[in-house]
Image (cartoon, rainbow, N blue to C red; front, top):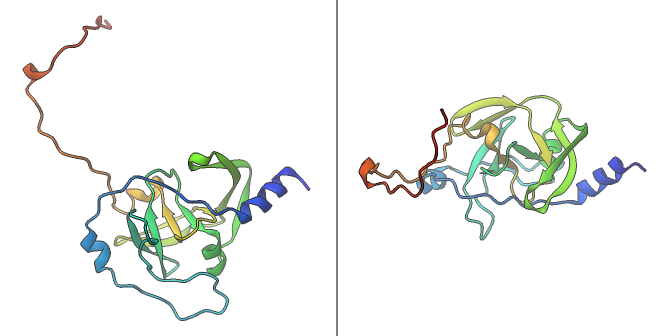
Length: 182
């Protein structure tokens, strides 16, 4: 077997946990979202509906609709690309393909796996906004979908910090003068 086939085989057995900083979102908004589930599907291998965060996990999770079915997603500001769990893609009949000669590095572990993406754009609804987007497909553990920075602002999310008042210029202390560039 080729190295790519071995890597793909190992890829199927890998469950990846993504770590990212918390993103501000009113908890009342997360808690107020009513859990939705679809009828039991004998072909489905994962639960549907918004399940909330994994026990002990304090990251921001939100509901997302994928092809009209509600799932659990978390905002992953540390991920460049959004990711659908491969089992969810299979359950929804979303076809995926391996991109030749393209590997994805998984977070801090540095593990390289083949890049698998959806063949077509899939309809996604989150935070009152709808997009059609082609996403990566990986085994992602508890969460069904990871919202990366490619979709972060399209769904209306922002990363905010502390707003501090500006100090007058005379309060700044010059540590070292640099020569002018001109």
